Every structure is written in C-alpha cells, then in structure tokens.
Length: 148
Ligand code: HEM
Image (cartoon, rainbow, N blue to C red; front, side, top):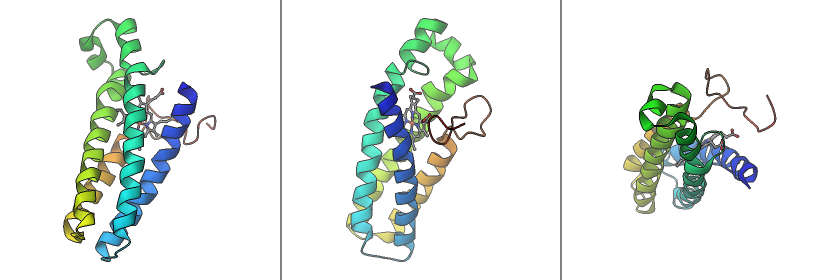
C-alpha cells in the first residue's frame, strides 16, 4: 500500500504544479474559469495532504515513527539534515502552501483575482522549494518512481 500511496503522492505533485500555473494565469488575466480550476486544485491539494499526513508518520524510510525508533529522540532528528527535511521542512512548507491554496479558493470563488493571484504565487514558490527535486543533495528523489 505504501508504494501505491507514494506513486499517487508523486503524481499529484504534477497535477498541483500544472493547476497552480493555470490558476496563476487565470487570476492575472481575470478569467471566470478560475472558479472551476481553483476547486480542482483544492481537491488535489487536500488529497495530497491526507496521503502526506499518513506517510509523515508511517513511511518506512522517512516517517517520524521510524526515525524515532532508529535515532531515539527529536533532538537527534533535528541535527540530521535528511531526517529534518522529511519531519519538518517538507511537512511544514507543504502544509502552509495548502493553507494558502485553501484561502485562495475562497478568493477565487468571489472572483477576487488580485488576492487569489498573490496567494497562488506564494504557494507555488513554497511548493517548488519544498519538493525533494532529484538535484537536491542528500534528499533528492527521482522525478518518476523507479526512474533514476
Ligand atoms: C503540495 C503538496 C505536496 C507536494 C507537491 C509533495 C511532493 C512530494 C514528492 C515529489 C515526494 C517524493 C515522491 C517520490 O519519491 O516518489 C514526496 C514525498 C513525501 N511527502 Fe510530500 N508533497 C506534498 C505534500 C505533503 C504533505 C502535506 C506531507 C505531510 C503532511 C507530505 C509528506 C511526504 C512524505 C512523508 C514523503 C515521503 C514518503 C515516503 O518516502 O514514504 N507531503 N512529496
């Protein structure tokens, strides 16, 4: 089950990135289509959040449960760049970004294009910074699972 969840979480990354680009474009060009795309983005982000929360605790390789069993304490986790990325940085960055996406949906529904555009841009930047891109030393993951 964990592998299936990881593949889905990975796939949703691309859905979220594409929908963020669409919503940013639509907010700037004041398109009515934003009402629909903001809903699709909200759904994709919240599914990713639910899967992520499960992985955050239970993932065999990078879950909090395993880290505590292997490393003993939160202090030890914080001193280790790899463990800290998964327990704190990826988690916090993505939760904040999903919060912004949720707020932006409220603005998009009311066709408040200006506010929506800023929330989407900040969420996009936080997500790009928090993704374990393959080129990131120590934490990089393949773009597609199984492809290195
Ligand atoms: C916009 C939201 C998110 C994006 C774009 C995203 C992206 C990613 C990517 C690209 C990976 C690597 C997948 C792979 O190796 O195939 C990953 C793994 C992971 N993500 Fe996220 N993520 C998001 C939200 C979250 C949230 C909110 C959490 C925690 C609450 C989370 C927890 C994790 C964990 C624990 C893993 C590693 C899972 C494992 O190896 O078993 N993610 N994420």
